[in-house]
Figure 1: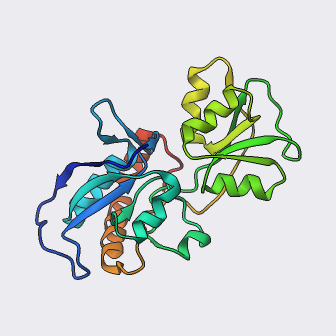
Figure 2 (figure 1 turned 90 degrees about the vertical axis):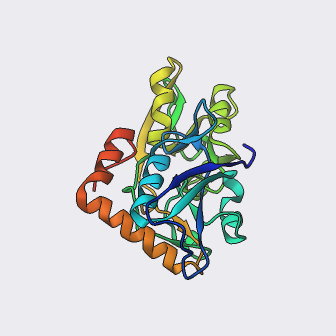
Length: 241
């Protein structure tokens, strides 16, 4: 997906004053291609769990926010280079990523990853060809566990690889894969799910500590009042806090 700048999504009460570290408008970077976490709706706007969550976090943090989309394989470099100010894109918190950027606390619990394959397929990690999106925790898991890894730039390409016989299965978040299994008679969730990563958080540049703290506090307030669990239940994106 090409990177596009969407119209201002939210002007929160009290917004307009720049943060000490230079933010006046906070640009929320997402992929827009990984439902139900984030996707582009029929009106050409960012939608999904993270859109609803991000808007609420901005309101609680009293920030003016815009939404920006960026392809997954360059989403961290473009945060670091200043093309937007946060990543809110189903990104799991990992030690490797923390070497490059900071994270807020997690806003979802670790979500089991699942294998999607043609119905009846048996997965043997010693011989299987597994598709995964480039730069994901699932791609790392496949590479570390003996299977042949096929990496693709977008999640939709991983599904296509299974449909056309290029890969035996896709490994991805179960919340993303479940609708494909439900909507197709040919595809099914197979084998056992695996738990990878430490939950999903917002990525922030290491230099933007004040911004990280504002979003961290907003996430905690949603955990405390139960509204985050309500969103998680609505969008079916993982276990409750």
